[in-house]
Picture (spheres, rainbow, N blue to C red):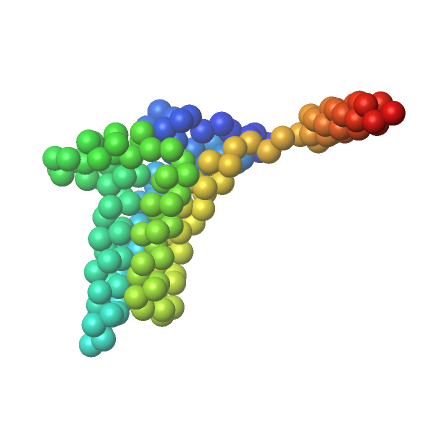
Length: 168
């Protein structure tokens, strides 16, 4: 059974990131695996003689470390500032996280448009998209939407009737 899930303001519930509109799926293990894939793709991207590919690969490795630090600070427990960074990121709104993650993922693609950069940054971009979708909020039901539309239509009709009576 799929149960819509409200994400707390920080985006975390009990130390785990929960995906909205799906069963209670913690994303922390998925983030670890996906950001490792981003780092490995960045490493493969660095094995070349083209300077832009090398720059994009270094950016991807840095991107993987930053996103891993933000999403799964327990993986960086020996980095002294990991918890501080994770707390600051938890205080960000969902749309701010979406802009940050999507922006970090787009930079290497702009530097070097290759299959390796596309596949390596797709995961980070998808994380940003998920945060963006959670920022949009829960979809309203059809009954409340129809009620709002009916109230607006009645208000418009009343204003029209008043203007017509005022002209006569």
